[in-house]
Amino acid sequence: MTQQLTAAELRSLIRQTAPYRNAHAILADEWGARAQENPLFQAPITVADLQFAKDLQAAGVSSVKLDFDDYGAIQRWIAANQQYLTPNDRAWLQRPFD
Image (tube, rainbow, N blue to C red; front, side, top):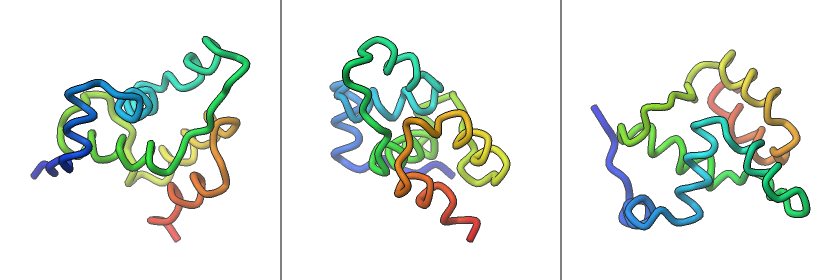
């Protein structure tokens, strides 16, 4: 069963706004490439970005898969993206496994 996006998420998807592009970059593992495009401003990933990415995936919008329910997959993703993550991001990602 797929999850429905919220109205705000759906608007963001349709308009391809920054929150959607952030979530898509997370799922496509392109956050680092985006940071290299503008080395003077490297925004960290936020919990909101992660939640939107998870919601896009649950709604079946993205074919790219980051398994938020697989401890090993999350640990590998954290290790690969640790420079873009805050302590709150890591805590949010690891919360289901506590």
